[in-house]
Length: 289
Image (tube, rainbow, N blue to C red):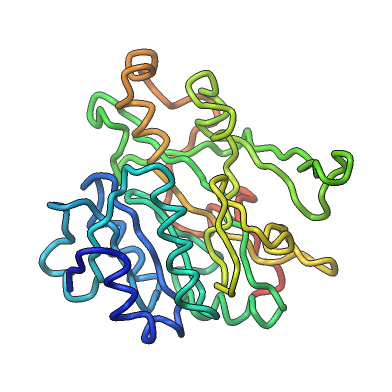
């Protein structure tokens, strides 16, 4: 069903969303919209909510399984504002958010559903999961000028690093179990990326609670929910494999002519399988086997 605004959608459907898990997909354009929505459905999200501008809709054969909401996706803070609206209406529900041409991968996602993942995570007394945004890019930019091609997707197998996250409220001492993560295209082409957008960590799987807010830098207002692990052992982490940065670098006038290829000596074909991400150390199974 199609709704004229997010407020109208939440007024009609919030009570049925409260069990979750739900996925918010913000579509900035139609690039790989079908594959993104299909991926979310395969992951096992109970509800998939498409936030899209007027005139952009899911494919007809998926429409009955998708909640489509007309939304100003180019407004300042559009995604953050939408997520916070949803948080207010579905306390207790698990929420995931992403853009089109982004794909959630978690350990063993080929055989396990997202509800199983979150049930285990909650049993470990965790209300949020760290996800890394792993840049994908087409290997041949002549064949895919916008850098998006699922059949020829590549990623960086190394070049990722972390820095201590300083706490301004505590004399800039490092925050406990929080790090700022970098790598991928945002690191290799940092001259084209504003400093505030170079991090690749994103808390994009979390449980809504009263008063919680998503911040513009993809952290949450509750500090414990921004940690990568609990105090006693490592926890699950996941990845959002994303063409969004590559697409932006190839379509923005300031960078498109400066980049002839994204491939380098540490590029490797993406296998579209969680085992590859586990082998590269880009996601963590924690105690979940």
